[in-house]
Length: 147
Image 1 (cartoon, one colour):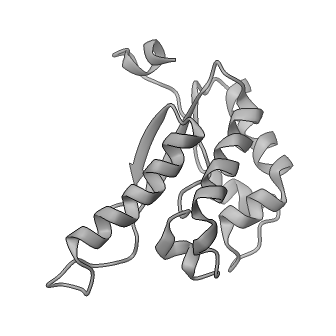
Image 2 (tube, rainbow, N blue to C red):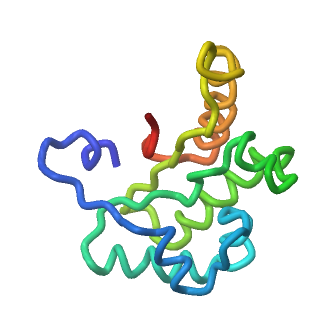
Image 3 (cartoon, rainbow, N blue to C red):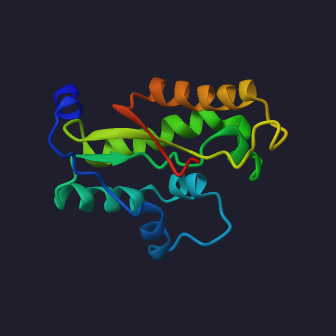
């Protein structure tokens, strides 16, 4: 897997997973990560289609599986378990020859003095999710939609 990730030629990824999950029936206002775990067949079908179309890597659907985002749904205590289950779901879909990335995103918090979060708090929130993703066996981390 490392050869795939270390090469200098383009790596073909998946894309528009959130939009595709909505098209497949995920309603607005739900926790996307919990919905995927309740409907793993939808994600796995989508990820298999990405691989059939040429994707060499997919993102595990862990976009908002951090303490801050999960707290909105009362799921923050399930952070590690959810991240591991979401990575496992993707790995089952694509096998061992396709890379699975751990996806992290913006927390929606602002660091002092522009907000109330401290730098150390934000680092700790990302560390928690990154450790869960690493223990789940992701091949790489992707940080997206972060300013």
